[in-house]
Length: 278
Image 1 (spheres, rainbow, N blue to C red):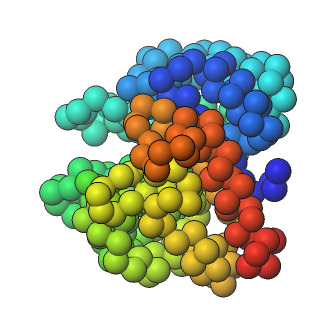
Image 2: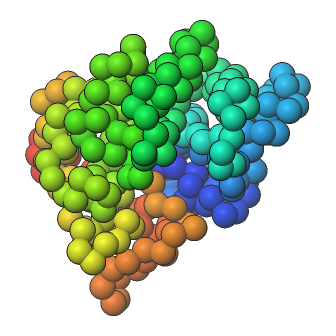
Image 3: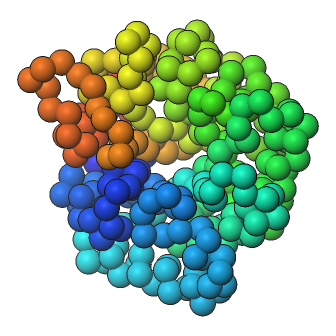
């Protein structure tokens, strides 16, 4: 498997971390994006923060043991959300710091975070991202904001504005959200110079489907590959299908999460070869 193609543990978000590692190994992939969210999974931001350095170290050791057991070579990136609606910023930052410490323990260079909810004043969203960025910068981490529907920055122009307002902020491009969110499939190429990470998932605009069986949605992966290559992009591509959401697709096409992950990986790699990019 190419070194730049990895898989998110969100494919097993409703299961244990061990189940995720076993699932990744069964797909013959060896690098993961580790999802750390309050709502699901074994690693919770609040628990990391409450337990301090001891909990961070214990969790890192658990992750390391599972990686050895299932032949996973590397946690390449992390994706996190502190969780809990209406969380005070001070508490969110406390949890973000603990997750950042976990990234350092695992040798992870980049952490993807989410922006503030849509409707938040732009200056407030900027200040929050600056505070997160300071936490990451103090630990030598790259901060990358996901292009996610329903959040400040869900429109490409606003995502670029955030990157211009927050020093060294990058973007994690997920094109599916630019299809089913407010952007409604309009071009989003202006964000590419800021992209530091990419997640891969097919989607359909009408009728709306955030998770489509790979190759049956409207995401133009060929254009994404070509344009990122032209920009000199050298980051990772994380296949992200979430087991807590349904997958749409035609009858007779496999729509279980492992099959979709494998199909998305194979589609992406074949397109790269076809385009002569790798």
